[in-house]
Length: 357
Image (tube, rainbow, N blue to C red; front, side, top):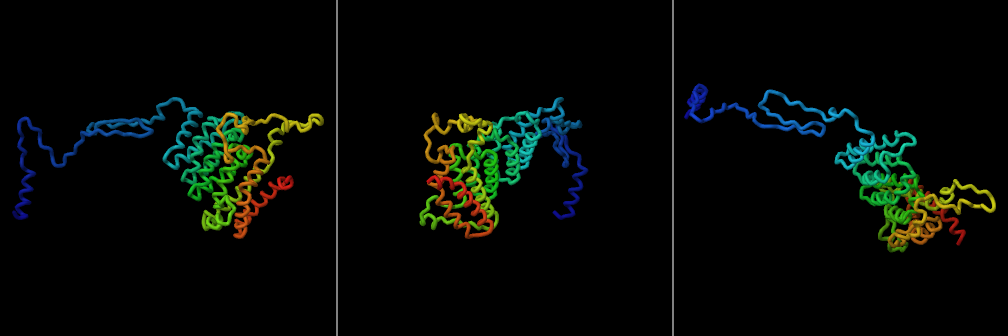
């Protein structure tokens, strides 16, 4: 069949009358569109509505927020944003942390927190290992807004996530975790170095981050020598780690007994040094006895006194740290200055121990 005959046949189709049969439906035109389907409009902030597309009436989508006559309370909003910290969206986690920080800072002076710290910390501390720098930065702002007295009672839980962040593979997460450790040492440093395993585990984590072996043998140092000056962010993390180690040593080698009982005044003989004999204000002042806890080794022991911390530091860490500091000083620059700061902290903190010996 030629092309002209085919065109004539196609034109005849437009003028042919379709044959109708009894009991059979009419033939649908070529441009027929099926409108019998039903669609659903699903939205987190909308009411689910179904409608027939063939109908001429249009669907009305209502907003759920417009259905309530009363606004949610501040406590319910606080709990809602606290639950959004596990969201998969980075911006949602950051915005929720920002809302929690603002809510805590703007509360009345003598008003308690919307949620106790025992509820807040298990929700916010896992964000220490968050992959977003903005989320970790907002987390640090939230931690700084918490009351110091409430955080001191949960410092063991804070130290657990700090150790996990310090040993992380990502350099930016290690750097952010060092900022959290500096905050913990500044706010509740005595509680951190006096809790179970706080002094030894914190030192182990910082030393491991530097790449210094705990053994002072030449074989250990020749096989695992650390490279201090690294290009990029890794070198900055090493310098920050040395500054954090110096601050940790200063806090650990400081007497805190007079600060705890500073409200006790001396009235002369026979009430001399009343503060030294008063009951401590800590809630767990006899925790070092470990009356009901599991057996503790040297790493999980409570070193509440300065002398105990000096003794364990002298036995296990001093030789390794001083050897690593000698290698760091040879690098010069920021690394050398940070190493000199650590050396001064050791000399000042261990001076009275050397005199007693």
